[in-house]
Length: 455
Image (cartoon, rainbow, N blue to C red; front, side):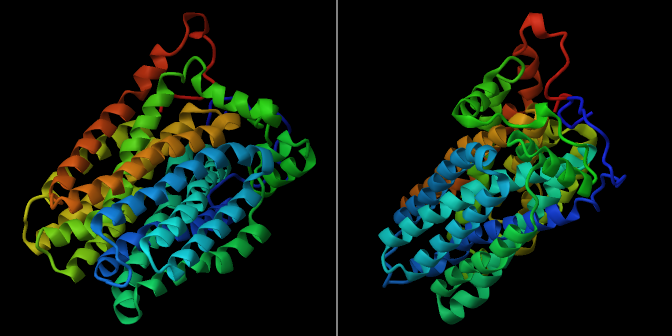
């Protein structure tokens, strides 16, 4: 059976190669590299924001800084919604390479900007590329991963986001004080030089997309090379404009029509937390009385916790299901956010920040793992694109909310707002199994599930 619960047809792999993590390691490694630079670019803004606010030549205010953070994530929203559909038509690899080039170009615009307006335009442009990259890499890894290890593979992939975030924080701690914040954004051009050529040369195309384009021999060759089951027609996304529309309408068919909006809501809450915290944690901790260096280092610590959390959550989710893990992690994130709002000793605060990182980021990633179980292979890229795309409205709201609270000297309320988002996220993702049962028509309740076991 496929991870979606659908029987696969076609001859077995002719090479006899086993479908293991080792067999698909090249795909995971290339996607890991792409998401590493995604995490670096997203976290760069939060890492250098204190320095930018202190730069009188730029003229950046807390309110404008929050608005610019929202412009970035608005670009991500557009990128995610558009890419999730375009990739089934044009292919995963070319769209992924273009996404990398676009956000690298946006980083260069930011490095050259002399005022908040051009800087915000650069962040919006970068967001277009960043928004497309994540659902593409997620769908690739979920397609190539061994079926029983999809959640763990997702967690492994997302460790790169936090490794990139830690690298960005390191740049903010070392490069920004010595050479200025602009040089940190110049480092954001590296993906165009490093990642794009590797992806273009080494990343395979999706077997499902190849099959949909009628390139059956190539699809089977890719599947054989990586030890995968050969794709069946049901795994191939529909082609043409009607196929794109059908893929979106399929997100509301019986069995998933109620689960889809709940996944969107959970993603909204998760991305509000991810981008709100990534953008404003240093400034919020600074407003709580911590020094500049300590405040920026909290971003490093929370991303280190995020790496550990991805590995822990992925393993547990493969055993108990991503919905249970995501709901619990959202609740723990809410508790962590409330604790961060208290003025604790520095050592205790570091522990709380690290623990919150374990829960916060992987709560959102397990939403993606749950979507992988809800949508079948042919709908996965579109489903993930819309889950991440609609969720980007939360990513827009998070930085805007932090900026609004900072501008009114209410930074501390940000921790309460993040805790409420965690509670709502837990309720939304925890309701997905019930919604799937309620969303089935009685006439089809006895038919085999198109999306596999309950998430």
